Image (tube, rainbow, N blue to C red; front, side, top):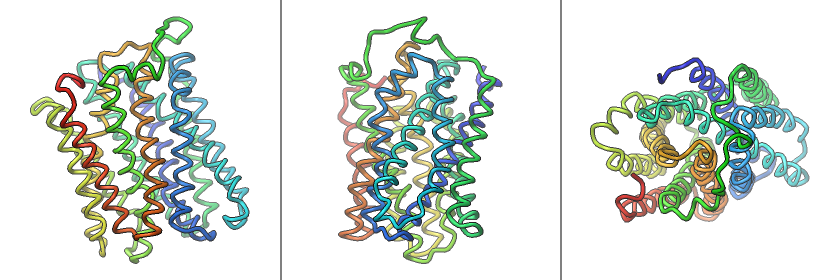
Length: 384
């Protein structure tokens, strides 16, 4: 059975913690207001992803050892505490740079734990013959969160300033912490079932190399759309900034309802390159976004690409793997994305500072072209 009470409870928890995370898509405006530039945006947003990526091997091992639910609880506590700690940083960016970066790192570890444990939990409870469909439908909760977070953040920012943004993000994470408490563990913990395969040992298999590389390049694209659309909209006076994220989520959510049918009819190996092309098209359209209509079309295209690509990569990582290594397999997928977001945030931030936002989005689109090439030249049976 696909839609169980555990499915719906975890979906609501995922929606809340994702909304809390996506509220910080407007953090670049805080950085600019406190004396930072595009390069600072890249560093501050990138350190979040760096901490998330560096912690991923430990997080993945922990999830397989102590269990998915207990890990998610720990991540939710960090996601609850972090937004309130931002309230204590009121100084200009230059004088509070180190505490700010340390807090971003803590916040990133919290998201890494939540992100990896929740998708490992779902991989455990979903029917294996409907895994891609189930992950895709579950992922709608996160996409709704991505849409809601920036809207709530922008409303709070307008009426209460950045303090309002931080408080609403903390409340959302608190709701996530409460909702999942009644659930039971989804699989035996490492004390009951063991596998000697380590996180890095999985890279001996070509499947995980391909999944990791494509996820990393997808993360570079996400860094472009997640971190630099707000400065673009601000620079060009495009009005309601969160319209892009709303359209992005709308495109991703809509395509999820036919994702299972598309994969069944055309095959996952045909849908995956199409999803990469769609995401790339949305990024390459952003340099032309001098009005809100074009901005929204770019959001829809990238959203559809995201809506297809994310569950395909996740399914590819965990399919036919034992419960004792699913946390590590999910960690390679999610860690690849976070590594790409870190590298993309840093590199694209400096590209934007030196050459402007148009070149920044062209480079983000190029990363998806490389992902397409990697998938095209993999061994045909490596990801089946």
